[in-house]
Length: 349
Image (cartoon, one colour):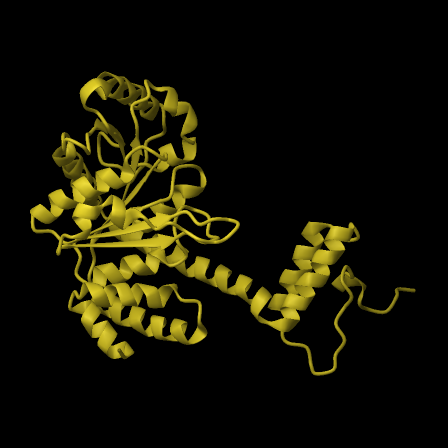
């Protein structure tokens, strides 16, 4: 399938073509990357947007169960839902289980839904390297809602808030004890906190947790992009469906208020700029391994740092200076590792 045909099928809402398109943008091959950029240009030209919702939470909180319950409720309301679920990769083997389609079996069979698990790889932040681009493709494919599930919760997982419109934190009933295990940074970025599993014998504990988190949020400084009364804490049960309608209404209310007040447009613009800067940083890092001269210089400076003859900060400054410098003429000798550029001139008499 050619690039133009693939783009046309994605824009027509073909789920199989969308899966192939995401595989293309996740590829590291240079020829695939060139085709991916053309595809992303076509997606951007379509001008379609969706409600982007980020979901994070500690392991075992029931993120997949919640997403399936919410997703099936939304598809039942005639909305098209895309789920981008990021699974943790092994630091040793690099592999991932990618079991979200198994955990969301009912939603995976829904013709109005699309589920794409992706490995996080070596990327910190609870998201895959190309998650932002996958979100853009889902929007171009005509999905109304894009749910982005991160691998966990913590200081590093706040990156998902930088690519979504509403950021939801899921917590489990723990009588308030879990408050100690959730980082302040993620609490400050959450637009909505949902206490899951608020049913049966766990309901009293869920209500106690709700009260604890409500009190904690009241101590935080108000944010200008929050509608009145937010961020707030609500109790839900993914198993029984209790509270899902109210939670979705709260998500829509936050998004609607931000669109009407102008915060949505400013947020999307800031996210686009951040994505550009991150891509530049990633490209610079890629040069360190893809270009032989840069890789050799990196290895030399690293050896000097390991031997204790060069401080890490000085080595990094030299590496960055050389990356920014114009290419040396053929035959020019490189400066030895550890030599400062200020020492290159003749000695002062």
